[in-house]
Image (tube, rainbow, N blue to C red; front, side, top):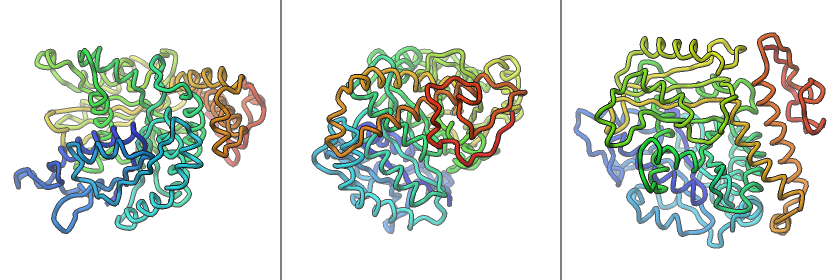
Length: 466
C-alpha cells in the first residue's frame, strides 16, 4: 500500500523524528504504545495506516522507522520519552564515539563502521512492504552525524533502490544563529550529495522556525519541541493524501513530477497554515482565502531566504478538512493573477493543489505549502560565502583529511554548489522566448559562471526549450 520507510539520523534528525511520530500516532488514533484507542466509528483512521506503520501480531501498530546516531544519548532520551515504547528495539542503532561535528567522521570512518547493520535493518523493513513508494530521511546539514552519515545512507539507499523516491527533510544552517564553526563545510559537502542522490529536499532552518514561533505564534521563549512540532506538521501534511481519503489525491511521486522541472532543482521551501497565537485564534475565521494568504506569506516559510526577488518555478498546496475544491481553484487563480510577477512565465499552470478530507488532530482545516522557488539560492549563497572564507585559508581542513578524506572533495562540492546557484539564477531570469541547451556550460550559454568546467552535471539531458 505505497509504504514509506522513515529514517532519522543524528541528534537533530531524531528529535524532529520523535515529534513527527507523536503527530502521526495522534492522527491515526493510536496511543503512545501503538494501540488504537478511538471509537469504532473512527476505525477508518486505520485504513491506510500501513503507509507508516506495520501491524504486529499483538494488534499494535509499529512505526516503519530506523533510528540512527553515532552516540547513544539522544536515542536513550527518545526511548524514555513519550513515544519511546512504540519503536521496535532492533531498529534503534547507535555507536558510542560520536562524529564530533565532523562530516568526514560520519561519512567515512565512524559512520562507515555501522553502515552494514543499518542497511540490513532497512532491507528487512523494505522486504516487509507490499509496494514501497520510497524513503524519507530526517537530518541536519550542520553537524557531523546527520550530514555525514545521513548522506552516506542516502547514497547507499539510492544505489540499492534507485527506482524508489528519496525525500529528505534537511535542517540547513541559519543566517544568524550558528551552532558549530565548521557548519559551512559540513553543509556544502552534504548539499553536494543531496544534489546527486535526493529526489526531493525540504529545506528547514532553525532561525526561520524561531521567527514563526515568536512573531506569529507569540511564544516568548520557543523550545526545540515547539520548532519540531512545526516541522512535523509539514511532514504530516505532505503525506496526508497517502494516509487518508480525499477529493483530490496527491502522493510523493505526484508531488515530485509536478514540482521539479529539472532534476537538480529539487530543493523546496515549505510552510503550514493556520498559524495564530493562542489569544488571537478565537478571533480569526479560517477560510481558504486566509489559508492561501498565510501559505504564500514569506514570514511563514520554514527556511530563511531573505529575498523578494525570487520567482516560483512551481508550488503545491495540500488542504485538509472540509473545503470546497471550487473555492480553492478560484482563490489560487486570483492569487496567481494578482501576483503574476512572482511566478516564472514559462510554466503556465504552476500551482498544484490537493484536498484530503481528514484534518489534523484538534483542527478543522489546515493547509501545507511546498514551493520550488529560485530564492532558495540565497540559502546556498550564504553557505557558499562562509565556505569560501574558511577554505581560502584551509582552516579546519586537517580534521577532515585525517579521516581519510581527499581535499579535492571540498573543491568539487564548492563547484557543484556554485553550479546550482547559477542554475537557479538562470531559470529565474529566463523568459518564454529564451532557448537554453541544458547540457552546455553556463559560460558558453551566456550566463556568468566562475568556471567553465561543468563536471558533467548536465550530461545526457535533452535540450530544453522555454
